[in-house]
Image 1 (cartoon, helix red, strand yellow):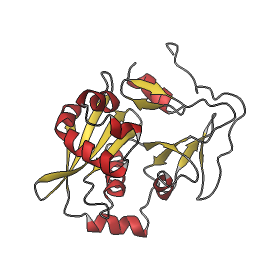
Image 2 (cartoon, rainbow, N blue to C red):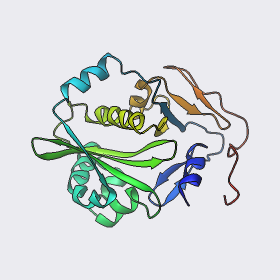
Image 3 (spheres, rainbow, N blue to C red):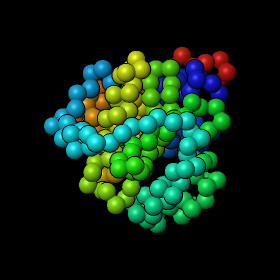
Image 4 (spheres, rainbow, N blue to C red):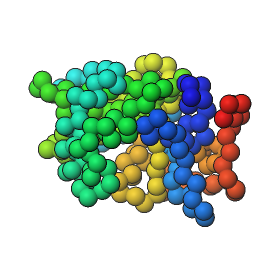
Length: 223
């Protein structure tokens, strides 16, 4: 695996978990849609502008994935509060499982640390790709649920991708009607992978999927 192959796969609807890349392939179901934001075309809406203003005192620091170890306690508190009883929260106390989920031996992974009053209140684990940034996972201080830290993290990733000249922010999978994933629809314009191409879709619109099994666009020879 290298950066070029990672880019080709993520552009064909794949997603990273640890050192692995995967894509759902469920018979008769294509509910999981890989989505990305074209950063140059993005403009924050009124709610997102309000989020930026209310979190204007936050300091962003970008560190290597070696900093992940320092964030484990925050990750555990976040999962146990926001996702109690889920499979991830059951294994959250294991540092090895945590690192296996978020880090990888071959990706360029960074920790976007968000600081307020001298402490880390949120972390956005982010991969650098040749053509974009991939939002791997974000977790934040669970005692601050109304601060919009998840939204703020995505807005910062969009801004950073634009600053670095990377045209896309990849947000992973989105499922229509899922309350836990509908926040991704709010970053407009947004594109979804149909199985053969990326298509812009509006709120409430469905992605028209290609028939058959999706295939790689210009697959590299080593795939």
